[in-house]
Each structure stands twice: as structure tokens, then as C-alpha cells.
Image 1 (spheres, one colour):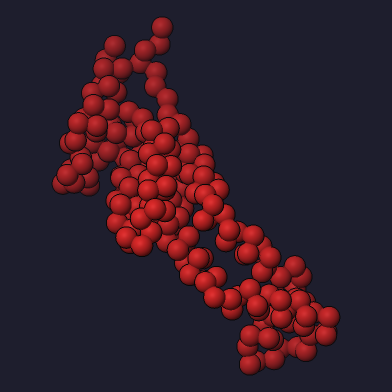
Image 2 (cartoon, rainbow, N blue to C red):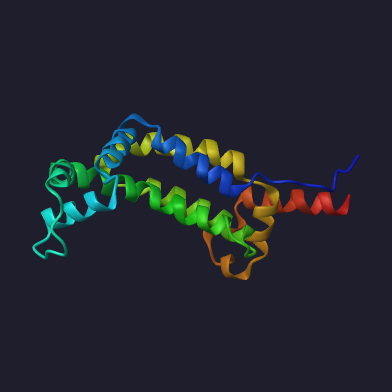
Length: 187
């Protein structure tokens, strides 16, 4: 009945689902409880932790909080903790950047498509040491990409001059979306 009307999934929601899916992977899920356990539950515990880790003394914390601070220090200083945090951050940062782009008031349809393209490139270029993790993230990304991708993004990408010199600007996928949008507008 209304063939000229088109719709697209909310990219911010799709990127949020991607982050959640990555966080649910077994190797990524292990870091979250450690971070939550490490996070001090009160300002006094935070002060005690600061006093434990830093030579500067702001205020002398109560002895009860020193025990909690020692537990948090153990987590913070444990072998492998920061490597896990850094790895997870490196994997998810491009997704967070794309989420922030999608979740604002700017006109960003073409940028979102290019951001998804860059996200795939980032994942493909992850270090070989992360190859099994890379494969898992790639599968999740393809699933979410298919959910988020729409003809309007592809049309906006084609029509934005700043992307005309990119190899992907006139690919079959992009031009197909552009033609689909044109057909809907003209029907």
C-alpha cells in the first residue's frame, strides 16, 4: 500500500545489543565480575584504597576500611587483570564510538554506514593472538550489521561527497541500497 515508506532499525539500540553480546561471551564475561568486585562500595573505602596505593595521604582512613582497601588492591594488582581490561576495551571501543555517533541529534546516516564498515575493518585487523575471539566478535558483528543496515544509510553514504573516494562507496551493496531507495521514492 505505501511502498515508498522505508524504515531502519535504531542503530544505537543495535550497537548496544552488540556490546551486550560481546560482554556475554565467556572470555569477556569473566572480567565484569572482577571489575564489580574491585569497585569500592563507599567513599571511605575509596579513600582507604587511595591511601593504600599512593604515597600522598589525604586523610587517615579507619582501620575497618583498610581491610576492604587491601582486598581491592589485590584485585587491581593481580596478574592479568589489566591485560583483560585492555583487551576488552580495545575490542569494544569502536562499537562505543559508533554507538555515540548513532545516539545523538546530528545527521549521521552515511557516517553510521561508514562507522560499521570501519568497525568490521578494526575487527579484521585485531592481533592474531586474539584470533578465536576475533572470530566470535565477527560473527556477532555480522548478525548485528544485518539487523541495522538499511537502504537509507546506504543512500546517505552514496550521497555524501566525503565518502566518494572510498573503495566501498560504489560497491554492489551500497549501490543496491541506493537504487532500492530511489525506486521507493519514485513508485
